[in-house]
Amino acid sequence: MNVFDTIQALRPDVDPMPMTDRRMIRESLFGVGHGDATSTIRSRSESGAVVSTAPHGSGRPVRSRPARRGSVPKIAAGLLVLGALGALGWSFATRPGDQVSIPTSVVTEPPIESTTTAPVPTTEPPLMRTGVDAVSPLVLPTTRLTASEVSIDPASGNDSSAVLSAPDGSSLWIAEVDGAESGPFGLDVSAVGAIGVGVEVGRDENSLTSYRLVVPCGFVLVNEGIGQPYDRPSTIELFESMSIDNEATIDVNLPTGWSVIDIGPTRTRYTTRFDAAGADGTGLVALTQIPGGSIAQFAGAGQRLAPTTFLGGPAFLDAGPFDPSTVSVSWRDGDTVFNVSSSSLDATELASFVATLEPATVEEWVQRFGATAAPIPELATDCTPQPRFGSTLDP
Image (cartoon, rainbow, N blue to C red; front, side):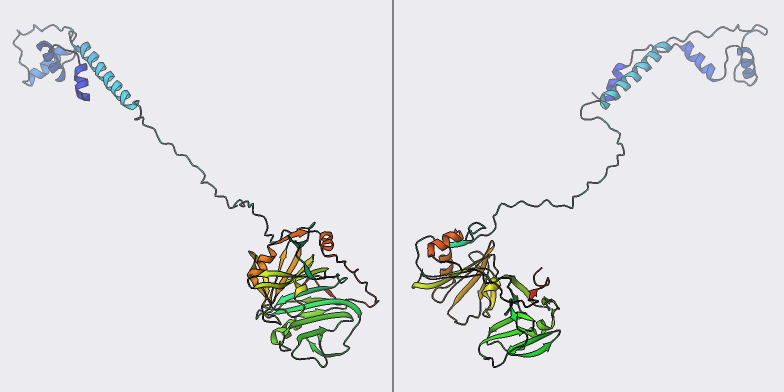
């Protein structure tokens, strides 16, 4: 049922309006008033609109307008219709799901994106190829492997060494060694920049390329690879970037292309040689361990250290050994630096050998091999100042 049918059904039955009432309504529409009927009709008669047939002087008495029957029912019907319309509209406005809401203007702040990214926690332990730590800084074979040679080289007082990488990938080793008065004795000295650089008189051109910087006491040695030409442009540029002050402090403003591979004090080194198994039988393997040392202690003979990967971590390979058949790898685990080398085993076989080692204390290492460390020698000189690396090399 539509809305019009609903309205029609609500309308009451009303009788037709009597003719008398219709006439009175028509007269009222044309100006008939409640107390002015005679004059109005007279004026209308004069105009010909109304003609009176009554005798002259006998006017029609004025009577009150009868009540209009049907007016109250109509008003009631109209109110019913209005009520029905209102109820119908209310029903449409309140039906579930059809509510009409008046939108309200709401100003909201845009969400602020966080510019800080929470760090992703990691549970991966640091790479430890040998498992050494501060308590057990050395390694031993898990089996009673016989060592053909054992040596302990004590630390050297306040001596330090550094190994640098040259722009062409070669290595350069610098060491400062405490000692007695030295000066330029036995050297052919040239002024390079702000320092004096000497080479030994009568040197062998086919041996280790070596320089000595002029200092009051001790020695400052600079070694490059065997057979390297003297006075290479990159080496001269490095010398020109050096300075040595009155306290014998050596500073270097590294030129473009140069970098420090490692630097540190000279610490006690523990060396053993084993006959280890390889694919073609056994071969001699040399293992050197230096707790608290630096890889620079493995580069004094002019080794050319090239970055490589060994047992899943960073390491350095001697890319220009004196014996081309030698494989020599250096790396750091914790605070200990290691070097393993062999002229019989390749890098894979050396890695397999290192994987069989286990951490040990210094006492366990000494007990296993029956070796004893010599005491650190005392410096028997009053010469000062002794050479030292400055903060540019040893921050």
